[in-house]
Amino acid sequence: YSFARKSFPGRRLVFTLVISTMLLPGWSTIIASYALTFKMHLHDTMWVLILPAMASPFAVFLMRQFMLTLPTELFQAAIVDGAGEVKLFTSIAVPLCKPVLAVLALFTIVGTWNDFLWPLLVLNKQQLYTLPVGVSMIMYQIQGHGPLYGISMAASILMSIVPIIAFLLMQKQMVQGITIGALKG
Image 1 (cartoon, rainbow, N blue to C red):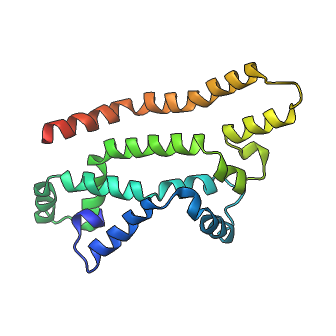
Image 2 (cartoon, rainbow, N blue to C red):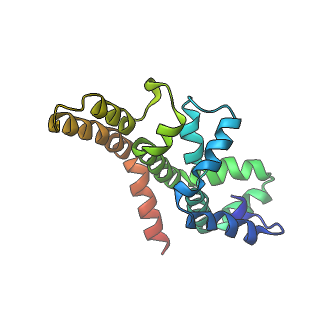
């Protein structure tokens, strides 16, 4: 919201720095992320999977670009009616951003669900493992029996269920976001 609607010194520089982190491969920042989440006592919790995924530079970029397309007249009319910054954000910006929030939620869910390396590093409790980590553990535990195609195929079906359900739940918001973009030009 701030990058799209507010003007402050260094706004372009900060936004450029945030976006430039997308140039780095994810694995190149894994040591710093590991140390940070360790100091925050997040290891062996679900938060260690959720928080890094939510704070992605792609999310900042996508939200800013969407907020730039929102009509300024709505915000100006609310200011004339006496709305403050919090009211502008909660009553106008957030409701209008439901489609892009649904897309970000879907990307985050699917990305976290399919992640292998990060959960393998930060989780020790088996009940918190993501499905790719759990499947690899099962495959290594029953090694020596030759390739187990049945288990591999069953695991791939299980791994595809959550992304499909997430898409079906958010399909309305995604289509709404596509049609909003088409109507605006």
